Length: 230
Figure 1 (cartoon, rainbow, N blue to C red):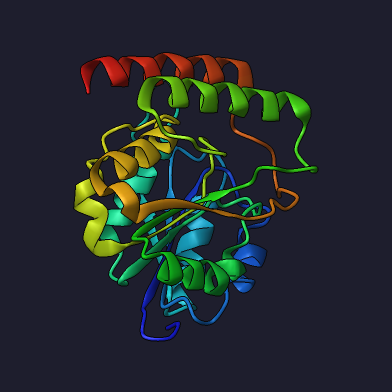
Figure 2: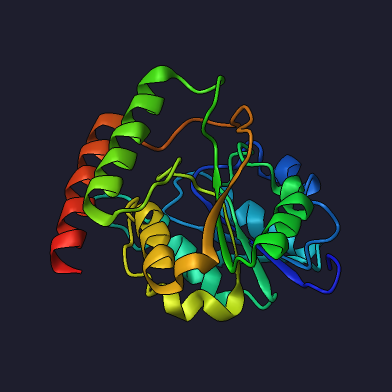
């Protein structure tokens, strides 16, 4: 518990066996529950998650192996969010890059600004390759042009939001496109209750599951299509 809030941490996992136990050991004590959602892992991630669950009353290990073109990132998030019971939900990737210990500061900022949903922006940044920064800036520009939303990090994988607004987000994308969808839907349905908070990305554990060029082009197409049909 953090102040008067109960916290659920939702983390999608794929092939994170090598560092999963270490990551769970670093989760701050104020998280009331940790929900790991294993998706299409080909190593022992799910078996390890179940083993860790047996010795950790905060931990819940779930499995959702649905994918679109081999990617189930969005499905894993939706499954974890649906299972969460805390009044605040923190979503973060399971590679250690996001500062889940920075939530007290983020929550203070949410309270001060009257926000119900915060996307944690990694930009501006000096520790992220320029090619990735260029890709995100391109998507940010597309979102500004099509939606009128000025956003710094359209692909952040860390979000903090009140559980009672989760149904308003109307999530449906099972692949990487859940990342832009959750922000655009929060902006669309929550209005001024949506905002960004700056964070600093850390060095990742394990290898990336993304093919950046292919993923980026799919994001570009999805953002445009979503605007046309939205």
